[in-house]
Amino acid sequence: MKYPATLTREGRYVLVDFPNFPNAHTYGFDEEEALARAVSALETVMIMMMDDREDIPAPPARIKGHAVELPALSAAKVELYRAMRAAGIGKAELSRRLNCHLPQIDRLLDLRHASKLSLIEAAFSALGKRLEIHIRDAA
Image (cartoon, rainbow, N blue to C red; front, top):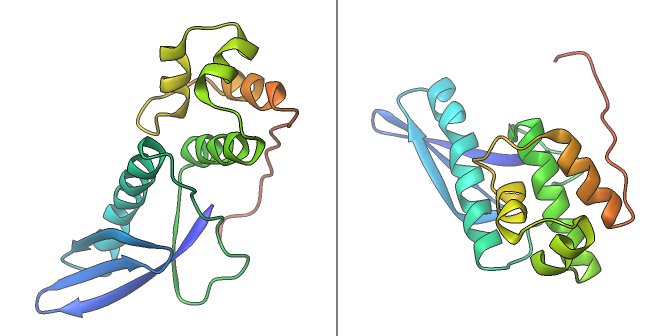
């Protein structure tokens, strides 16, 4: 899951903004540091959107310029959240379908929690979806 990022030099800092997420901003002393911090900024704004039950936009198919990629586990959790929203399924219903307690679903959707991939797979299955992993050569 990659999202476009705009980098702007302002004085001794490099600022990062996201066209798809107007509330996400961060900075660094150089491009490398700014882009490293951008992952956390992107995850933070997504956590807030999930808490507020807002739609998270899909990443664009093509990106020109800089892009920030979510870690695989965070991407899987965001896609699970998006699938739940698309199906009109809330946390309580997913909890019933997985026969687990609601706090487990909260952790499953928490981008800061190291959930087991098998639980995310089970959640997708409960939504009639399947999680697939594709491996590509590094750029």
